Every structure is written in structure tokens, then in C-alpha cells.
Length: 116
Image 1 (cartoon, rainbow, N blue to C red):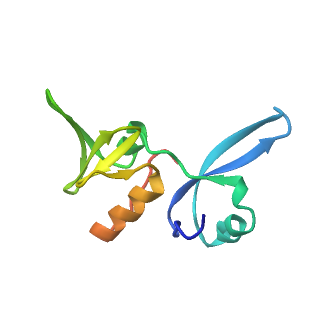
Image 2: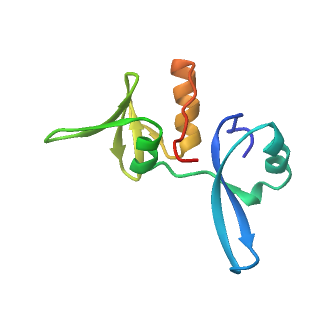
């Protein structure tokens, strides 16, 4: 798991609520403090599937015409494709950290998730 991640990526942290007696997931941002936890117990973490709501929270704008829907930010365009989103050559982007890494590689800027 850690070979796909870098500092700043968003992932799910799986935990158990003793009072409610149920599992739940919270979104965390990978930082130096929790990096060792991820390495030691990767089963407590999951990748976050990318969806329209998250794209909008990352600052992408939804553009729609009669034939196609696109999500754009800084000249980067994604379109819904199968059960994920596609970049230029239909490279599938399934998880938020994949998009974060691609966006950083192309722009040198980090994506920030609003509402965290």
C-alpha cells in the first residue's frame, strides 16, 4: 500500500467505535506522524474511491453539454468512464490518491480536499 502513497494523500482510516459497536471510516491525510501506522498495519487503511462529490470538493468544475460531462481544473480534464474517471487517453483513475499524484506530477501543486 505505501508504495502508492506519498505525504499529503487522502485515505480512509478504519476504526471501531466501542460505544456504537460498529466499524466506521474517516478520511485522513497521510503525514509523517501516521506514515508508520500505515506501514505497520495496512489493513486499517483503505484507498478512497473517486466520485463526483470528491472531485467537486477538490476544486474541479463540472462542465456538461448534450453529449459529455467533464470535470476540469487547471486545464486537467477528467470524464466519467465505467466505474471511475478517465484522463486523456482513458487511463482509469479510481482512487483519490491516484488523482492527487497525477495532478501533482503535472502541475507541481497539491490538491486540497475541502471539508476535512
